[in-house]
Image (cartoon, rainbow, N blue to C red):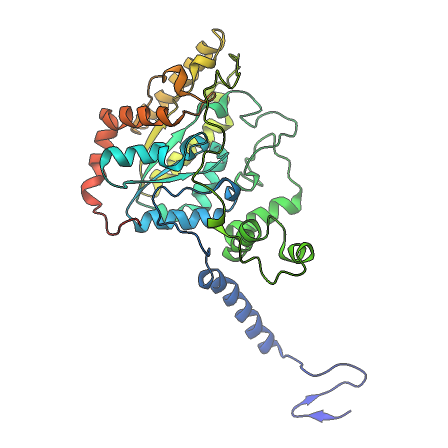
Length: 378
């Protein structure tokens, strides 16, 4: 056996480098630091968040890394965040015809940022705020409550059978998870770890935004002659155009529906929404809730009383908790594209009614004087 410095080399083995426990510790520490610094050094490339009326592209709805960047930008621009699902995003409207756009037009400056996310039901919103919305602490936040998520047991995620739904990674994985959600142990543990390690969230961002939803190794096999997926990114997906054809619900052939509606006291989605409001308020956010407006023109006479009972219960809780809110009257029938989404003209009407409501005016007065804008949108 031959000595090499102070170390003994074993015969019949590969011994170019042998690390001591101190060297292994230093290597592990260097890897951990790199995993935390890499996402900071290489953030979402190409996302022009400063352009007017930017909204998270539908293709990136599950890219929570980009959502976090959008929230950081709204914070830096001293804008109030508007949270919600595709109703806020503007499923049947251009990005310059959404609720946030029309509110900003009425106010004469870009006061509100569109943080709507396609398919963001209340249970997912609670997770998004908890794990990716920390930068919004102490900010004014307008939260949209879409009653559609309480329209049936399936929408409410309280059926015992398996139900496919959006954003499963955002709902509780171990305790208090929806009755309809049955993840594999590895899937649940992976989702929990991803929420807490920025590197994993950033890695998922690269997968969604640049690699067509595939792992990098899989992408290289599908694209063997491409060096890097350089032509993709957050800004290569369209967000300016409507997500669906902007025609009325009658033109779409939707008939009146006898929705069963879940009672508020038994609704998982309603409990999740209340938890979101409570979390935001615990962080110092000045919360305002916009309820609906749901398209009751599309409900049968049997379904409407059940909906009104649910709406009354939700309003009662908001009043008890002294959360400012506005529940607008139903819009004219031809301003809806389906059960819950207005068309562009509907958003224009809604923005006018909302901005002139006493509750909204009082809420905005409570924070607007303290928030001079420090930048400008390009």
